[in-house]
Image (tube, rainbow, N blue to C red):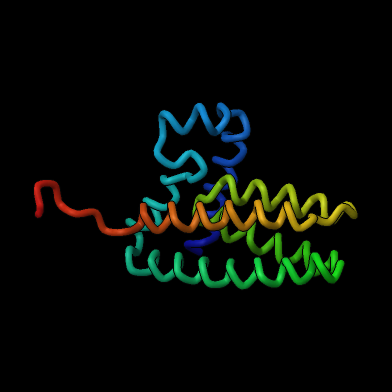
Length: 149
């Protein structure tokens, strides 16, 4: 239920983000414009240890999906592509990784319409995945106390 609740909130925010300023403009105001940190913070309040486990699982499964996605691109397996991309988008949305979720959803729609991604698009998705995982881990890690040496 936790992941479903987070995914629902993230989808709502993703719809709002579609009207947000370009990432370059948002970056000056927010540390991680590609992430909805409120989703992450809400998950952390509910279960901090569970959040770390969830992030680890997302990183591991996401990496495996990207490897399988590359194989599906080279094998021209559109059905596998769409399923892999769909799963990656859902995991990203449930953690508040909005840029990754939006890119994956767009790629999934194109694949289902008969225009599978090329290798360059997969590399870009992988870059977004790495940025999302890094940002989520940074935000989820315990912060040192002010003034602590």
